[in-house]
Image 1 (cartoon, rainbow, N blue to C red):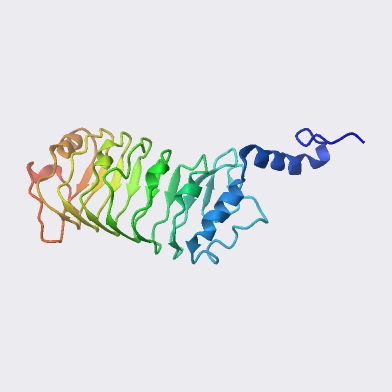
Image 2: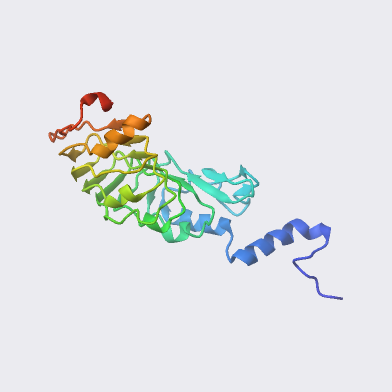
Length: 247
């Protein structure tokens, strides 16, 4: 009997063999990658219980695994793992293997410790880390080369030290939420023309609000939230009419 060419099967086995060929071409399936990520997390068994080998994560843009967002081509585009009491290690080196990953949200969980080495995820467009217990000073180059990043939410954590200057070099940044941390020093100059929302309130910041934010606000609908309750009131170089404060 002639050997079967697995990449050109009969129609009876087409679906199964196609899946095998895809896995062989990529080296590892997205299912395996996600299961490795799950294994690195604490308290994941219950909220991620349908992350298992009984089904693929994506079939077209339909997701069969909770928290997974799929592209039309059936690839993992996003992870929305919110309000799950997750903890443990965020395995960045494994996340990098998800080549179509563009958005991550792990808001409202129990992650703690230093911010992970997220600059390895250079293709990300959206990153939501708010309402965890991340702490410590963020390296100044933490966001280097993340040239596609549009939205970054890091509020309600325990970050300290200065706001990293690499945030000012993200050309596509539109929303930046740093409020309710323990950042110190001055607000850096943000030259991004597309910036629409900045919240640095409830930190330990002092000094003037940079003129660039005033310039941006004159040309676009921008909200700048800068009020602090840590006894380091900000000095304003511009009339308060261009700054919208919220409680």
